[in-house]
Image 1: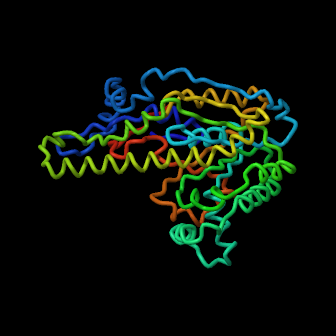
Image 2: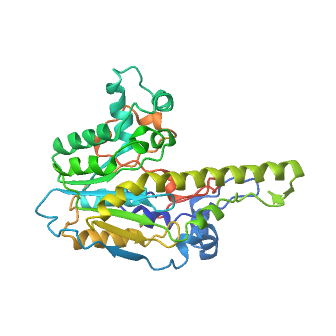
Image 3: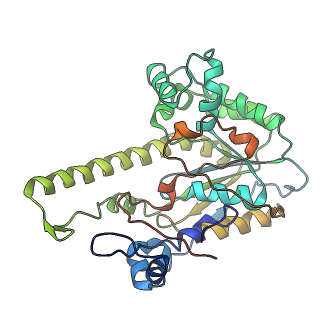
Length: 346
């Protein structure tokens, strides 16, 4: 029982299911859990976006993308907000096509301490510094680190995620006062970007509509809720919805200058998922990458999954050296109140 990181995570997530329990909420044996997994009714109710037939993707490929990926260093920028499966897609491309992934959060957490003479060390201290001094990082500095990582790597394929999720980074001068077009032009004088993967969701409002607590009802565990508790849960729902709405707005505001720059040279591949968490985006992008001449990774060595409760636990691990990919479980399951899940062998 288990899974390998070399398997497409989206397919693993399709096998998630509620764990059957005894009356006292004690999980049954593996056999009992497996029987629940085999129930299509339970799966369709728990994960409708994965189990139902998703709408067809709409793909628009820019006409300025060159077709010599096998002959040159291949750099791809990827943009995707909440519900785009960007995290899972990044992991998939790194595993299947041997991309080295670069994201802004890892750059800041790994390199900012050196920039300030190692006066900070923990994730919390870094975030506090970013909140106090919005000018501490710049887009020019970020791109210089990316340039260094590319020039010192033996790999020739890079997948770069330019928009972080942390609000403290998005509020910095790097994303608010930067001349994005000029800095990207300077960056491309040394390393040309093959194209941009721009993941969009036409029905983005469904993300907000889905932020309703699974426990918002008049009956939880067979007990009637008081008016005070109902009001509290409603406030929690509204707070979650507000935070998600701000995340979506911040993503669009931060990604637009980058996408606009590459759109001028027709090097953008727009992929409209239509609905959040559309699993068809994984095989579609794999096919697109193959069509541009990038062969699959033939490395069949075993993969390892590491699980951490918070970011501070992996700060001392050399992510680049071990070629680890960071995936948030929230990218797999949007519902924070989801029950325990089980895996099946594939």
